[in-house]
Image 1 (cartoon, rainbow, N blue to C red):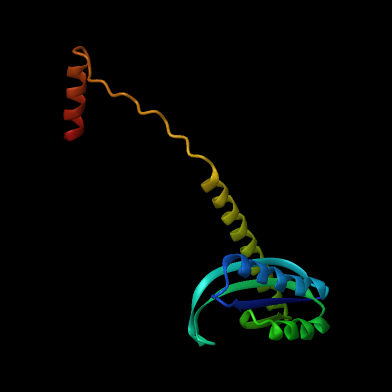
Image 2 (image 1 turned 120 degrees about the vertical axis):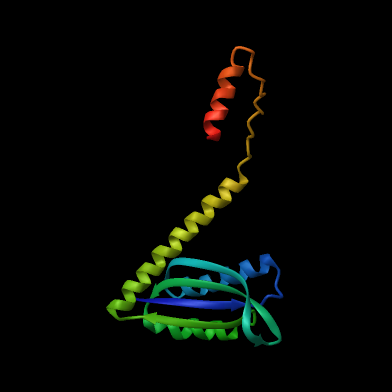
Length: 155
């Protein structure tokens, strides 16, 4: 098993549900050919450097996985016939240095996914606001002490 990374660009004309279904189909292609997906990173809708098939934007999605090298040809063939993909690139990590970098990327993507999930949970949680504290004027006995404290802070 070797380590790979795939960056796919999905057409922007699809709805959000269709984009997610397309990404799931791409992941299914990898797993059906014996791959183990380590993590994924949804980069979202971005502007392309140049128009591709008259599209100025595209939905970027990165998949990190391990698979036997013989399955890559089939995965790329299935990506080429998928009409919902504008572009894709497969990157192989085979030297020790590259494998170490791949492991770092996978850990970084996992931490980002966890942070994104916790952020979504905190946004969903209802915000409980504290009741406003009534501010009262100092009593006549406290007034000289409050004035002296204010003068000391001013100096």
